Structure formats: structure tokens, C-alpha cells
Length: 190
Ligand SMILES: Cc1cc2nc3c(=O)[nH]c(=O)nc-3n(C[C@H](O)[C@H](O)[C@H](O)COP(=O)(O)O)c2cc1C
Image (tube, rainbow, N blue to C red):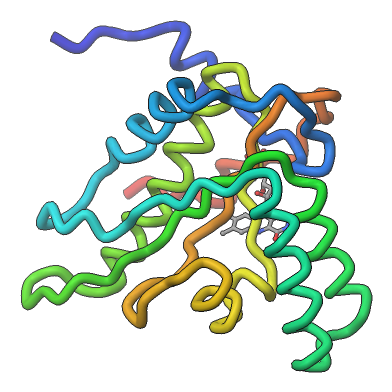
């Protein structure tokens, strides 16, 4: 039977991300990561389509992706500062999990619900990581949605896109909390 879990409620009411650029080593090892990915995959999924998968990126792979982003950015005339920011995000990363949305053919489940489910996986993985004591941050950017990055960088198929990169590591600072929405402005009681 369900009962109030004070620790979990405290976590959910106080959780906040740790900026990727402040994350350092150590990073989760494989067993620790499997636990986090298991929690991430424990996510609502209408029709049990499993419209998502994970790609674990670390070390040299992130650096290679950083170089690819630079190449794509120059080719596509992306402003220099945006190229540099995206490259630095990848170069400085120690570990990132790409959550891949995998759109499945279905007569019953609309595409948007598969997108929501992939977004929910990102949050589940983010929260599990924070709950396990790792610094974590959900990032995207122009490069993440770029087709060449998705195809030659990550090997995605036509029905796949990146829902988010979840950067993981050890926190070096605890950032101040940001302003949270005022419930009076976003809740309607009918
Ligand atoms: C889909 C999505 C994409 C995001 N992409 C970026 C990004 O590219 N750069 C960035 O600085 N923040 C980005 N953010 C915001 C960060 O995740 C930010 O750290 C987050 O809003 C912190 O919220 P929290 O403290 O409640 O976890 C993104 C958030 C979402 C949901």
C-alpha cells in the first residue's frame, strides 16, 4: 500500500540541476549507470511502445562529437559563438547520456505522446541521477537537433531524434536555486 515517503517528497520539492559546466570527475561507473538508466526507463509509455533508447557518451567520443559540431557549424554558417559554446559543452563533458526518441508506427498512440514519453525519460534519468548524489543537467542546443550530428555523430535512424543530453558527473558547486513558478499564476482550480 502506498504511504507518504518523506525523503522522496523532500527530494522532489527541493531538487535542482547542477550546471554541466560545473561537473567534474568521478563519473558513475557502468553498474551505477545501469541503475540510473533503469530508473530512467521506468517511465509512463502509452501502448508500451518503448519509444526511446539511450546512448552513453564519454571521454574521446565526446571530444570527437565536439570536433564534428565545429565542422558542421562552419559548413552551415552557424555564428562563431554558438559553435564555440556547443563544442565546449561536449569537450568539457565527462559523461553524457543521449536520450533518443524512437518514433514507433502505431495506429493508436499519437506521435506527440511518444515525444512526451521521451521527455519524461529525460526527467526520470535526471532525477534518478540527482537522487543518487550525482550532479546532472539536461541540455540540448542547435547541434543536438542537427541532422548530420544525429546521423553521422550518433548513428540515428530516420525515425530517431535526440530528446536531450543528460550530462552527469560530480558536483563542484551547489548553484543557488532559480525562481520557481508562482502556483497562483499557473494553477486553475475548477
Ligand atoms: C528540453 C530542454 C532543453 C534544455 N536545453 C538547455 C540548453 O541547451 N542550455 C541550457 O543552458 N539549459 C538548457 N535547459 C535547461 C537546463 O536543463 C536547466 O539547467 C534547467 O532548467 C534547470 O532546472 P532544474 O533546476 O529544475 O532541474 C534545457 C531544459 C530542457 C527541459
